[in-house]
Length: 361
Ligand SMILES: Cc1ncc(COP(=O)(O)O)c(C=O)c1O
Image (cartoon, rainbow, N blue to C red):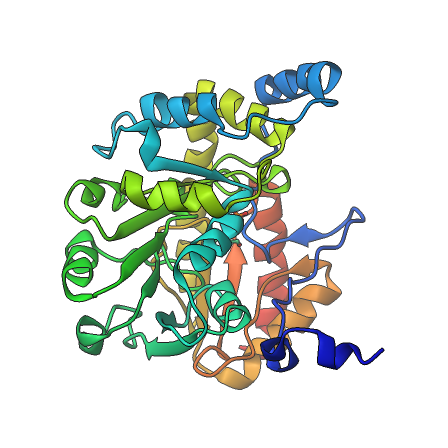
C-alpha cells in the first residue's frame, strides 16, 4: 500500500501542530502552557465526583442546552452581549470551535487572514483545510497595522489578549475590522477571563463576528475540554450542522456548569493570578536588559535586550526544573513567555531567574 498516494494531497506538505512539553511526573514548575495555576475549586470537584457515580454510561446532551442557558444567563449576564440561546455554540475546548469554523467556511483555496505573531493553530488548521493564508505582521508594539483594514478573505482571526504577547486588541479596532473585512471576523478570547476587556458587546453591532472563549484557562478545566462561541444565530446554526453529534463530554459539561455556579469564588482565585502578574512584572522589570510587556492574560512576555542571552535563561531554568516557553521564530528569539504560577511557583521562578541573571546579565 502506498499510503502517501492515499492520504489527502495537501497533507503531504502539512506540518501538524506541535504541542509543547507536558511532563506528567511531579517536581516541575510548569510555566510553559498557560494553564491556570489553581486546581478546580472543591465545590466543582464534589459535583464531578457525583457525576462520575451517576451518568458516565450515557451520552451527553448533544445540544448542551443547560450549559448554553447558564453561560448566557449567569456567566455573561453583565457583559452586554447576545442573549439568544441559539446564538451560542459549545465545543470540546475552543480548539474544536476553531476547527468547526474552518469546516463551515473554508473551501480549498479560500483566503484567510491571520496576524503574526499569534496562536499557532490558526495557521496549522488553515494548511489542513487547504486555505490560502494572508499573514499580516503586527506592528512592533503588537497592535494591528493599517494594511489589515484593506485585507480581503473569508475568515480573519484575531486573538485578544494575543498569545504570546498578552495584549488585548481594542474594541474600536475590532469593530472597524468587522466593517472593512468582507468575510467573518473571529475573535479568540481564550484568555479574556484575565482581562478587563472583551469584545462581546460588539456582537450586537456586527453580524460578521464570532467570539469564542474557553473554560480551560479562567476556570482551570483544560483537561476537560469545554469552550463556547457566540455569534449570530444563523452562523451558530451552520456550526451545529457540521459538529460531531456528541462533541462535548459529560464530565466537562458538569464541571463547566458547576464552575458557573461558583464563578464568584473562581474569580477571586483569578484575582490572585492578576496580583502575581503585577508582582512578577515589577520584579523582572528591575533587571537591566529585561523588559516585561504589559499583559491582560495569565502570562507575561519577557524581552531580553541581548538576544544571545535568551536561550541561556531557558536552558538554565530547565536545568532547575522550571519550564517556560521560547519561540524559535522570526522576531521572537529574544523573548520568553512565562505563565503566571502560584505564589510558590513564581517565587521559585524568581529565585532561579536571579541566580541565572547573576551569571549572564
Ligand atoms: C490563544 C489560544 N486559544 C485557544 C487555546 C486553546 O484553548 P482550549 O483549551 O479551550 O482548546 C489556547 C491554548 O493554549 C490559546 O493559547
